[in-house]
Every structure is written in C-alpha cells, then in structure tokens.
Length: 164
Image (tube, rainbow, N blue to C red; front, side, top):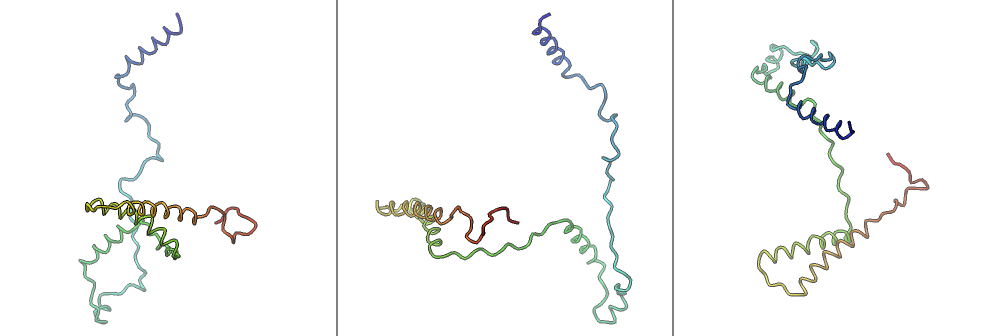
C-alpha cells in the first residue's frame, strides 16, 4: 500500500464519520466542582450600627419626619446599579497653546473647511483662493509637525530611561 492510499483511506473515514454523533454526550461528561457557580449571586446587606440608626420617633421629634417606605426600594435599586462601576477621575486641563500653534491649527482646519463650504454653496472660487486654502492646509500641517519635536525634553537630565 502506498502512502497516498493510506492518506486517502484516512480521509474517507473522516468524511464518513463527520455527521456521526459523539460516542459520549457532553452532558454526561464530569464537570469540575470549581466551575460550578451558584444560581443567584449572594447579596451583601450592610446594616448601620444601632448607635447610628435613628428610630422613627426620634426623626418625628426633630421635625424631619419618618422615612417614607416607598423611597427605600428606589434608593436600594440605585445603589445596586451603581455597584462595581468605575468612575474615572476628571481629566487634567488641556495645555495652553501659544499663538503660532493656534494659527497652525486654524490653517490646518480652515483651508479645507473653506473649500468644503465654497463647494457646497456653489461659489465661484478664484485660483488664488484655491491656492491659499491648499497652502494654508499644508503650511498648518508642516508647522504642527515641526513644532511637535521628537527629542527628549530638555529637563530630563543625564538619564533618559523609563518614567513612572
């Protein structure tokens, strides 16, 4: 028998058994206990200490009135919804831009914006206006790239290694 005929026989067996059911159903396979999860997650109830809990009589004597039972379920639902959500800190303020950087950004977006508005409005554009808009876009881009700089900051000292 040649190696090619062996491979053909194996291939025929694979194709013939493609639609056959598995010998052992997946429901019969053992499931590790570490993978079992409880049907409902356990809820943690935190009760305030008795010394801080005020009774309805104390609240009525203070004039604040007793607690309304209809408000408690709403508050609990809000607390449950808010659990586990990450609230990021507010972002730092944007750096102040100097005049050349502001002009470069204005040119970068202003040139194409002018061309877009003029084209949509159907204005007749002179050759010098088209050249100025394209030159403003290219000049703004080049100015921002040149001002970006790719070297280390001047105050990094002798070691330019990792920073935390």
